[in-house]
Image (cartoon, rainbow, N blue to C red):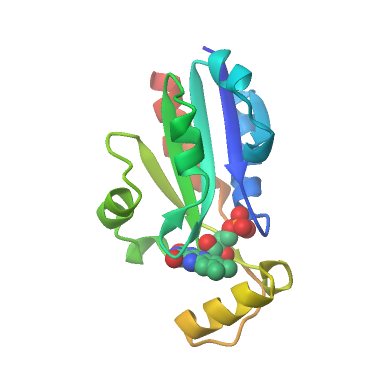
Length: 149
Ligand SMILES: Cc1cc2nc3c(=O)[nH]c(=O)nc-3n(C[C@H](O)[C@H](O)[C@H](O)COP(=O)(O)O)c2cc1C
C-alpha cells in the first residue's frame, strides 16, 4: 500500500508528528501546500495532520476536496488530551467517518505571529511561554491502525 503523509503546521509541532509518522511507516512526507492531484492519485492512503485554530483542523477541507481513496486525519492543538472533546471536533470539522486522532502540540510564541499571540493570550488568559508537549508514543495507535489495514 502506497502511503503519503501531508501536514499543515505553523510553528512546527504538527510537522514533528508528521515526520515521526512518515518515519515509522517508511513513506513519503509532503507539506500540504505542495500536494497536487497526482500525489493523491498515486497513493492508496493519505494521512493528513493539521494544527487546530479555533477548533478548526487546518487543511482538512483542502485534502477532503482532493478526494483521496482513503484518508486518516490527525489534529494537533495545545489543549491537553484529557480535555479534548473528540466528538465535538469531529462534528465541527465535518469529519464524518474519517478516522481521527488528536495529539498535544505546544506553544511557540515566537512563530505564532502577532495576531496569533493576541488571540491565544485572550483565550488562555495566560502569559505565553514556549512549551513542547509532543510525545512520540502518541502516534502508536495510528500506526497500528494503518498496519492492521
Ligand atoms: C490563533 C490560534 C488559535 C488556536 N486555537 C486552538 C484551538 O482552538 N484549540 C487548540 O487546542 N489549540 C489551538 N491553538 C494552539 C495550536 O493549535 C498549537 O499551538 C499547535 O501546537 C500548533 O501547531 P503547529 O506547531 O503545527 O503550528 C491555537 C493557536 C493559535 C495561534
